[in-house]
Length: 439
Image 1: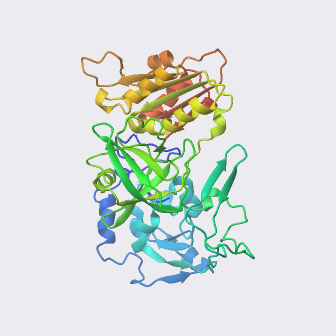
Image 2: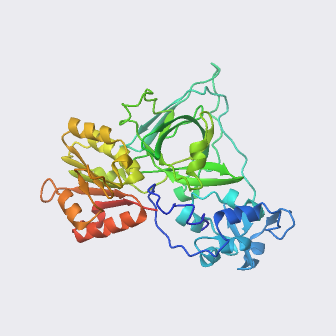
Image 3: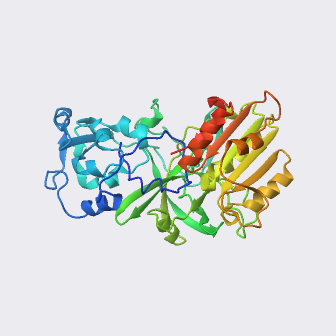
């Protein structure tokens, strides 16, 4: 329900996409951008109408504040006066009013639960809902920081091995944390962030860099195939959040630095937009600085790979990022696979990410083939050129057998993805055969 303005996410030319449902946006009035909102929150103006007081809000009191000029909304137990934010909300006033005077947590999570509303609306905080919070609990004894985690995907179980700090007998394991030993819908769990340390920054193209982040001690983060996380930075005093898809390290063998153990490190390919709000700040971070990383999200299901015979990947620019893990998994874990084809759209040769690594992979594994398509090539370019089109797709997307099981993954800027999906349907590929990573 709450979001940053369209000029902030996604950037007009952004190719960093995530898997989620889209939504319509409304034009904002002049002077109603994200930076304008940040300036207003720092102006000292009373945005709650309570002159700095925080109150406990009952359900009865919350219901009274249900008009545009007096609109309170509850998100995860905290109540905000969103009336001042109405004209700054990219989704429009009507979208906010859907939760007026009520608990808007479900509506918020349906549209964009990744947004850091606590930071965006901290000056609009009215108070907490009048409910009793649970007392935190945990293990009865201390354990070592080193522990191991093993995920058994085919049965959906996780094995965690902990080491005692003291060699004594435990009479009890401890008390479960709040909501443990119970079934909770994932949308109700909220996003959890951990602070990660920037270990390295390597140029990949003229405007794209590979960032390596180290997880904090005792942390374990496994991002499933086709899912993304959110990176969070504080910019001009406000926490800004953006989604990115981590990449696996199986294409990194040519880098000077040795590939780091993937149980403690996470990699991101990120395009730097000089006029953007988030990526320049990310690029200015020094080695050793911290970045907050969320738990993973996404709707890609690995079951789509079952008995798969043909896999086609359509990527534009940094829309290539979700394809990296998919490509690695497909070539190493799908015995039925006959063909993997990556069609990689870029503007110029200099924009192509990991070109040599992809060409070497194609040489090494005969099931894999890559085709580079440029929209603004030089005269020396001998490969394909143009944009996504029926002719290009008809040429590239050929099944190995007439009725082979096929999956097509597509990711790139919104116009690229939307046009690609439409063209794929026109070529008689079914909805179940297409997975799009779209914002």
